[in-house]
Image (cartoon, rainbow, N blue to C red; front, side, top):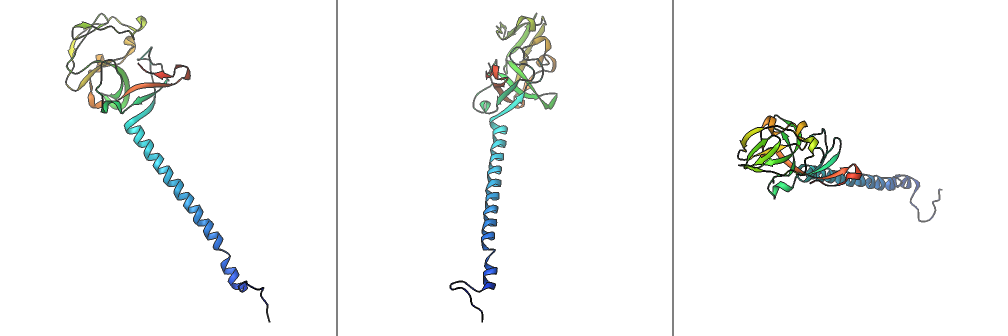
Length: 198
């Protein structure tokens, strides 16, 4: 005759009931994994949306925008601004290079659609008027003369601030508006030069 302690099920039943806490723990682990995957996917989608439509970090390569931007500086490009605001003369824009749209360039907008742009011994004339370019330094100017060019509809004439070291509209023409995808607006590296880009 066997005797079981009062209130407990037989031994065989107890051995079958033991894995129950393990199953509950397994369910909690799967729930945590699912929540983690859900949060990660939301974060990835948010970052994709942010980079595609709002803002993106870039590293400057080259010296064509000296003294404003130096090689290897890090900047934020606002991709949202031109959805609600027109491109303006003087904006520093990022765009797909017209001769190779897989490459991005950064230059300053000099001529808007319909403008006439001319260079006389390095001096810039827009619509027949001399343009004062306070952002240029004397050592970065050149003495180039170019005949007047009328900027086409839906296009922009762009130049680098380092005129004697810039591959720009003087060499390959105007930039279609559809190629301009953002405005350089903030430098975040190096830390000592952090601030808005003018």
